[in-house]
Amino acid sequence: SSFVKNDQRILEAVFDVRVIAFAPGSKWKVPFLLMGLLFSLLREVPRAHAVVCLFAGHHALLPIVIARLFGKRGIVISNGSDCVGFPSLNYGHFRKRLLGWSTRTCFRLCDRIIPLDASLVHHVPTYHDIDPPAQGILHFCPGLKTPITVLGYGFDPEQWKAKGERLPKRFITVASGAHQPSVQVLKGLDMILQVAP
Image 1 (cartoon, rainbow, N blue to C red):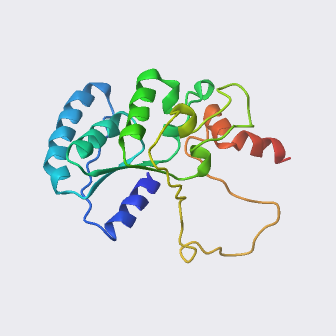
Image 2 (cartoon, rainbow, N blue to C red):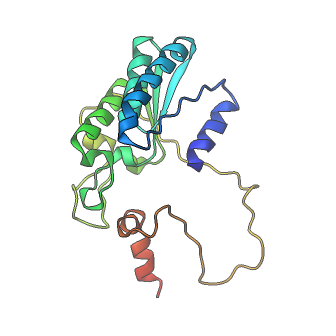
């Protein structure tokens, strides 16, 4: 994803970054990838200052545990799905018991959580009342002691300059998977379509 590449680029501007990707694609590959992940972590973590994981969950649990074993800082950058559970939308780590457990464990074992927005820490959604009444890290991890620092996405305004004449009553919005009804509700596109007329 572009936001993952952007985070990597920012870190690489200051640090010597070793990327260990975990993208199984198929479930049968997971045990082999976990073994490769373990060997990579055992090689890299002792020489590292910190371990940074994008999203908490199954893929981040082993890196966070290994970081802790070697006395290194473990940092989780939370981007959304690892902070919520919307069963009706089939979205969020906390809608599944085992994934919720590994996500919760990552949050408890890491040294710092960096969500991109305060709503990922705790909020009460008002756009529907189907799922749990509250969402966010603190809702699903009561009593969490790990420090949380909200750090939103930034952008370079010099890179994004508007060109041409601005047309009234027009805008563009982009959402990955926007053709799916659940994504439309999750991203608020359904409300945009309702108010558009």
